[in-house]
View 1 (cartoon, rainbow, N blue to C red):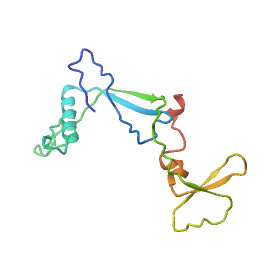
View 2 (view 1 turned 60 degrees about the horizontal axis):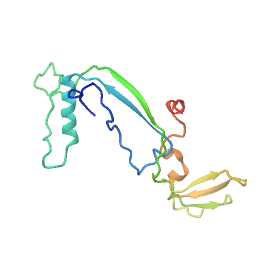
View 3 (view 1 turned 45 degrees about the vertical axis):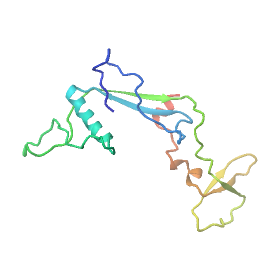
Length: 173
């Protein structure tokens, strides 16, 4: 995402949307983290990235920009007529990890379709033609019991991510 501060009173952009999270996910049920990197650009770099963004993001309508080669600051030494893609730059970067810890109501429960049948013994499961997963539930009263499910995500939390928090997650309580 490219944004300019040239027409602003100060070199600061506030309330710029960085990421959209749909209500079709449960990412905000607990808390959410995003690592934001901000790069400083000179005017030529800014125009290069702005042109690239406008060509790649606006496609599919009658009034779109016709895709074309965007001039870069790199050139082929052996063949000056050869087109070189990309832009070489060195810039300062500032990084910040942002945490959203608020509770958001109304998000879907991805586990509502986790239909399960309780199995109280170790007999073979009577549906060998289907793929199934067994969840061992430790509850009250003991002993643990087994639950059969045909939806992989209902039994295995690693389908949608890892089961160990990253280092930055535990530090930001």
